[in-house]
Length: 120
Image (spheres, rainbow, N blue to C red):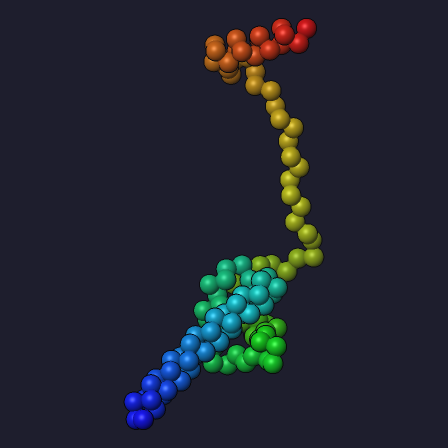
């Protein structure tokens, strides 16, 4: 009977340790999401947050994520990108450029010439 109690205590202790690890991972992922929304440039800045001060709400989300990021931005503004209302635009794709005959090897030139002659 004593052995059963000891085993049960070990199982409960292991479950408690696993829950702590899962909670820490959940807090980290929620802080990463809040950091991305806040415009953090390098997500390694999350390591500077005291995780003991972070609380989770009933939905498993960081209850004060916006406030935590605002405090971190005030203390360490270099971790965040410049505030900008503009949206980054991807550069236009350049049209594929034909390779000039002077840039081709003799074999490439012969192949290209033959292809052109076949089209006529």
